Image (cartoon, rainbow, N blue to C red; front, side):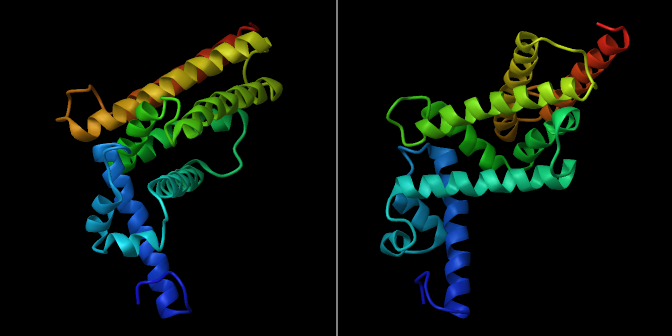
Length: 219
């Protein structure tokens, strides 16, 4: 039975089929872009008819939102496992490279993210709101946690403008690292330089060391 209803056997099949659709949609949209990727492409990858696919997702836009929600939850859970949950301040900043690590370990998700960030910058694209919110929330989150590190006394007493600037530097490096992770997934080793996770981790370590050195000097 192919429908996402019922109990036990059919219900489990529905859950597994929905997950497979989301995973294959991520591959399709990542490789072809949202506009070029079709519901038929996704259905063929999953091994179902387009009509069966519509029982789970009524439109390509709905499927795209499900894909983004799924992988947002996935990478957050991964970071919590690797860096610990409920992080704040300096502990949060030190855990940011784990996000880049997740993208490096999941090239399909990385391609999708890169494609959406590029296409979704255009007003009217179904992912436009997601892209705007992603950049805004990332910067706001980094700003908040740098501010917490100041409040905790772990780094110098930066002014609000300085906190904003430090957070902006981390955000720019972060988005650049994720973009490079997408390139490293598709190009021969070494073409885009050393592994992006190592480079970004070194950047965060150097940033934290700079802060702590300034704090020790009473800056």
